[in-house]
Length: 461
Image (cartoon, rainbow, N blue to C red; front, top):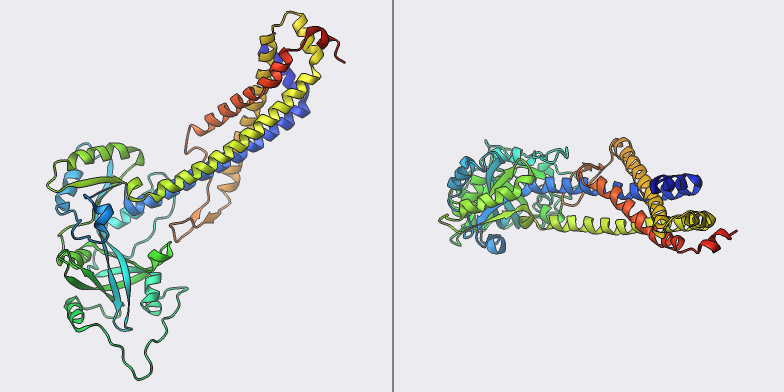
């Protein structure tokens, strides 16, 4: 009879204790797997929303991350159209790329002259035809609904603003913004508002006239030469942003209008050339190839992945990894104490049996091996039961319950799901890890059993 057969018989001998130990390990394994599956799905959702906003790779002027937000004209990519064309026809990148687009970031002041209200704004100019593709990217199959965009190719002077900005500018009623406080009257009866200064009014007057019935605001920003410039934006809608500070400042507009504001004319430059890939797994290959392409460009350019553009993504992933590590430690402690207790009691109950086996010629290593395999079998069974229970709970309870939540960085809810197959190595790691840990936890009582004196063991009552 080999050690495995003997260990399996011992597991079955006291079924109640084996079942209790296995159940404890299975519950711990199920809980850890459910958290890991939820964390995997959340991280994939976070990656999806981050890439929809920033793309996989951005090509920017050298120094843009440090200084570009305050001086978008100075730190602009100049020949962006030629660069975009070069990327699209590159034989290495072409199969990997879903979209190549451009964006221009702006900061300035926004005003509603009719109510004499103004505030700072942070805006972005985008190629409207590319927005739908960016916002619908789902390379990880998260099935998160794409965020709708009101920007269209037809409206060269049309844009959207944050709901918070609409509130600050007193445009709640015009834009039909829900949960928006009305701007109180600032002027006393009989006193008219001052309106725009004469020089800015002349600049605003040079901008296209707002469409009849369409609310509009005036945007003021410094050009690349430091000269103030004003354009008029027809506001199509107010879109609530997830972060309150951004919601109070956000302006989205077509790229051409943003370029007119910063450079005085369209086509002059952009803050970044944005590359959207079909699959995130191709990021390293694409970034390396892009760095090669821009190496000899006339302008010094940096190639940044979304990890560098949006470092909060890695911070959140790291936070989940830390929590999961803490949960794994708790499960390990449960495993150690459960298995040590089970094998320790088995050694005490089978002292005479151990003495008999030693008298029949079993070596100390044979006795030790039997108890270690017994502990490993308990760990293996517990982990397999835990994996099966996790799949049942994930697929037939959580994922079918229709639960949702609104994570940081989003203004709309996303479904709560547990994805156990996002990381294919997760399940084998859990099964192998718990099995090995349970076997190692059996070493101490197994060693004690192997050191029993044969005569004393046989006389044990």
